[in-house]
Length: 360
Image (cartoon, rainbow, N blue to C red; front, top):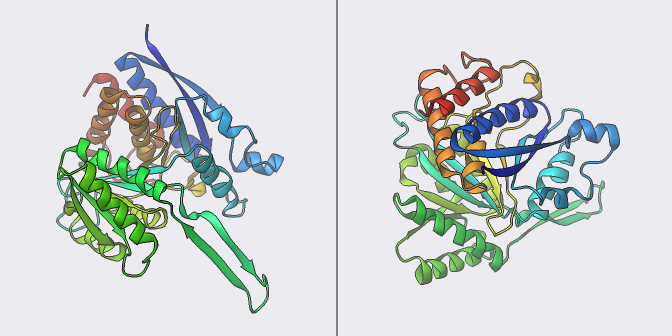
């Protein structure tokens, strides 16, 4: 009897439902090819629902999503909703309540995809960023003093625990070992200025590495140097581990060197037993392209491949989706930019799904 996996589908806002639909199409093709079933349930959480009801998420949202094997997200962000309401009320809330403490971002240049880096190709750009996803500046610790006056003060405090460091570092070390490439884990931080937070990260990093992962080479970059090396020598990197704020920044740079937001996939992972993870394209909702069938769905399709591997354990199906993505970028697409792909949104999804079905 074929195994059935339950997936929660959150299309979200703007072009989110369009790209999520293409990701679903490819995942369904992979399920049919590799002998398992996907049971989908659609949720309307996003800007339109908020504008209609005043509710961002129901109180039961996290408990409801815990009943699923994974969450597949299109995009969050509505032009008629003040920035921060949906992002904090949906994305951050789910990341925190579901303890999705790892943000996983592969940075991989696919064949046929243009990169702004001169003389760099797919053989140079293939690394993974492991971003701590539940602590740091994103905890919302802080506030205002004398709000709205000329003497106003704003305080935002970064909160980092040793337990938060350790669980993120362990995931990163294990990933580095399992990738079995350069077997190098690079801690990115700012030890010369953030002397408390990164003293903690650095001590935890070396203690775990020395005691449990002697086969993994440990390296360190200041975050500003890391940004430079992303551009000059991306081939130096295998796996990077980084705090929440710096991770948010460097992964967008990573998206650009791999060809843009149209290709960049990510996962918010709770890798613990029984944990529920959420996968998404890392770009925004791109509302100006809504309904035009021009947005690139490849990032959503790539997020689907991550879902297959990391949440469902369907590694063969995940590898098949990635091969189909690479064949499509190499042979069928003209560009990764919206409206310049030489194909429509649905055609890209059709193409990748067909390659999966054909077993390329």
